[in-house]
Image 1: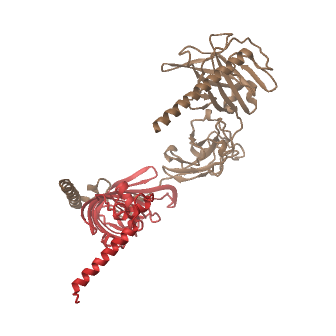
Image 2: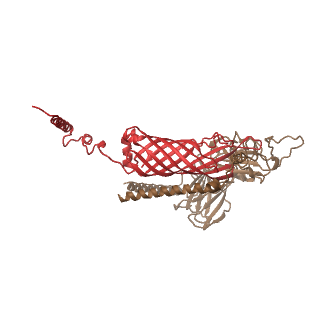
Image 3: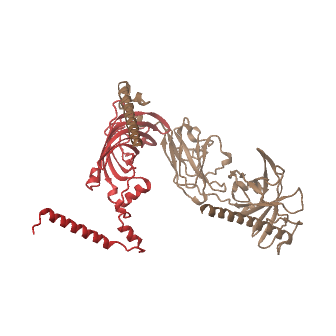
Length: 386
Length: 248
């Protein structure tokens, strides 16, 4: 019965999937041939041929990488880094339909209620709908194994100036400069978010030799998905800072461990971290701890450290308050035990009990195991005989 | 008419038997009744209490948890504020069973305990870094377990004594540095007082046996002593644990 109901579920799912695919094709066909009421058409639209879904493998936008996702519609936040350089973002596309051939693509930006997935490739501008064609410079082909990928630069332009949703529809054409209907389409729902998260608060640094804890408070959880911990590895922690004639500390520096690089309130750019700065990007909403290894800071006894929050769009906060890690040799139980006259030598059981005891203890242990084994075997034999 | 004593007894027993039989007959459910519950309760072959089912007893499993203290009173005891805890599992094979009186078993246990304390810095003050000691005790032992109180007298208490030999692997670290590791060994003794759970829910106990083959369950408290040899790191001592046990 279970198997039957499972089969039914699979059949139902397959039917629903087929229905949804058919509805999509039907919708695009009718729109492209009949047009949408109230829309203005700027380019000729051929008869839609239906077609499949364009597949995206989004690798990175700006400096922020996203996990590979092959689906028609992706929801991707775009931050300040993704919008820089004139609002150009790079999308990596794999052409599933044409194998290794170059896909001829058009990109359309939709705002308002726009669903610019028309196979007819029409620009529509109304009070509630706006589909505008975006510029796509020549895509770069990237060969990965036997597959071809294409890095497509999409220039968002002024649309990056304000935060909000920016859906981009990619239409695949049958040939270069084709006037015909698109053969397939796919959408990436970009959400422009250039607002930086708050810097973490309550930062505390510890003391140790190989494990030095750093803790902070969760802060703006909803907007923070990653943390950077940054530490100045330069001796004295002053880095590139010049004290100047009055000898004052730079703004945001901690007097106990002054640094010109790691300073409270300073902007942090993950793409240009100097070699003198130790940094780790930590994943996990709600993460509040990190453990440094003092061996990463040779020659230092005090190290300035800050925490930076990063949101899903890749925006980074300014550096948190600066705290000082203290690196110093430590002693634990074993040293204390030896200092107090502990005799035992580390090693296997034989060496641990010493020359005098090893023969007796090993003999006793082995004998006991043999007796127990014999007794078990005998009991089992008796039960079988019954 | 003189009736001797034997005749009187015979008549009395006849009367009792007849009366009991008629009483039993009076409780019988007429044939064809739909009251199957009543039939089940009255039929001596179906009545649950009349059925005797007991699966074979072959093994015992005990799950232990409890505080564990090491190096009591020693100057090097940096873990004085740490009570472990100690977690362990013990499996015994039943070598001999004197029905309703006692078991003789043999088996072994494997456990885990970890202690941590702040390490000490240059100044002699404690720092955030930790120093740790992890113990993995392995014990081979034989046990005598007396359950006559529970089985014969209805007092749900079981007494057990265990003698064995222990090998405890120890590993001590400070921060990421592995300071030392080795084995401590020595004789092991334990005494246990257990509360037989079958006593409180006999129906459930029998269902557990019929469904899973678990003959008995019990809660226990155990006092143990691990006497490490003189050349071993003295990770032994007297400690107690409590837990849940199964006979199956």
